Amino acid sequence: MSVARAIALGDPTALPSRREEDWRWSDLRGLIRVLPPPSPPNLDPHPRGPFAGVADEEILIVNGRGPDRIDVAAGDRRFIALRFVAALDAGAHVARIAIEVGVDAQLILLESYEGEGERYVVEADLTVTLRAGARLERIVLTHDSPEGVSVSIAKVRSGPASRLAQTVLSGGARRQRIETRVDHPGSGASVRLDGLYLLADRRHSDITTEVIHDGVDGATVQLTKGVVRDQARGVFQGRIIVRPGADRTDARMGHHALVLSDRAEVDAKPELEIYADDVSCAHGNTVGALDEEALFYAEQRGIPEGEARAMLTRAFVGEVVERIEHDGAREIARAFVAEHVGARP
Amino acid sequence: MNSMLSIENLHVSVDGKPILHGLSLDVPAGEVHAVMGPNGAGKSTLSYALAGRPGYDVTAGTVTLDGEDLLALDPSRRAAKGVFLSFQYPIEIPGVPALTFLRTAANAQRKARSEAEISAPDFLRLVRAKAAALKIDFDMLKRALNVGFSGGEKKRMEILQMAVLSPRLAILDETDSGLDIDALRIVAEGVNAMRAPERSMLVITHYQRLLDHIRPDRVHVLAGGRIVASGGPELALELERAGYDRYASAA
Image (cartoon, rainbow over all chains, first blue to last red; front, side, top):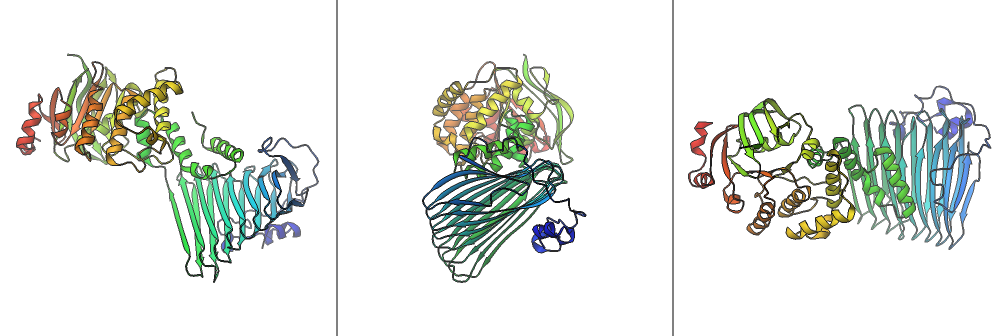
């Protein structure tokens, strides 16, 4: 069952449901009784995206229509803003794009999901190939509308000595899933898969990752942090599989969330499946409230409660932002945090 | 004499359990008063109640600072009025550099008092001078506040914050705990440097040791949730000699 299949068939019973282990916290079958009609072609001008003026090039995919390939030639460097827009008239659509980063090439990809309409059901499928020595820094920023349903699935095949560095910045939607699956060859390749979800109202965000280590000498680090308030719901599913023979794999996964209201919820499932010897793997998972002692300490020094809460929340998520390597992307991540948590005074 | 801090018949409960039972205490401007007492007497409860910590419920009594009702204010407003509490166990604030924290606090207090913000260069100059006096390496202030600091470093950071925020009323809760003799001397010198006619201090301690370095004008004995004896500095020496046993019955 998949969103793409349900859209192709116009059949909501083909949507993923909570009965599937991988979708238990992001049920779509129970949510969507009737799929919206297929999205029409849309040639309207779209206001500037969140990465306007930062990247060198912009690629626009509206209502599922746009370029279907990005190629970065061997040794080349490109800096691209890739916008997936569900326009005002969007209904249901699937966007597909293949991205290939050539040998020793570099791509900085600032990817945005922008929901202009109200009730849309959309999927984006990305097939990413990193050749030997290729480097991809991928920032995913979501701007979905509160009633939108948006699923993004990226399948990444990493080459030897390649580098994937990814940060997902999610503000949630009615249902939203950002899924990343990486075939990790070991062989000196490294992967960083980070995420941040900052959710309010009734928004939902699901960050799902799977990394399969299938060769010796691979490294994966993951840090996801989340803050949920009101009746929001955050989901983190992280799976790292170390196949037999993938020795000297180094994998670390962390997920930490703050739950700021009684009616908000966080569901987390960190999984390490290790079938090789001589590996170094660790994971940590915490879900809790803001530290009341720290809050009182800050207030005692004269910082008003609301400002103190924002300061401590910003500090909690700051670690994820600081790991972004590209300066311009890091600034955008800071602005994203300020927008969702409250700016510095 | 005109009292700056005036505590009248203060009753405080924690989790529904009464800890302070009618504590009264006056500290005139410019004076340093010590509050001594055995473990469990309510010393930390007094400091937290004055600072407004949630969960420390004042069930009766009044506290005024410069004649103004302190109990009606939330903790940050009390701080802006000039209440500073040096914590017995300073809290770690991951992700917030000490310098950022202190500047946020200083400007929040100024804003609450309708004063202009302190400029970045002025702030840095002030902090550098105060940090040097307390033998705090300036680079330490770029690290997350108190995270990975030793006990002595944390206490020095408390005094640095006090020096920068320049409070009307400083409450020092067991400031000597966890300090070796050299650190104690540095901290005490930092506190003594802040003695001023317009500032009062409440030094809360179990042991007399700290009072060799910070000489109090008055000493009060807190036992069983009340002040049971008051006197001059000699009272602290007497307590050191005779212990708190004789006050157990008074409580």
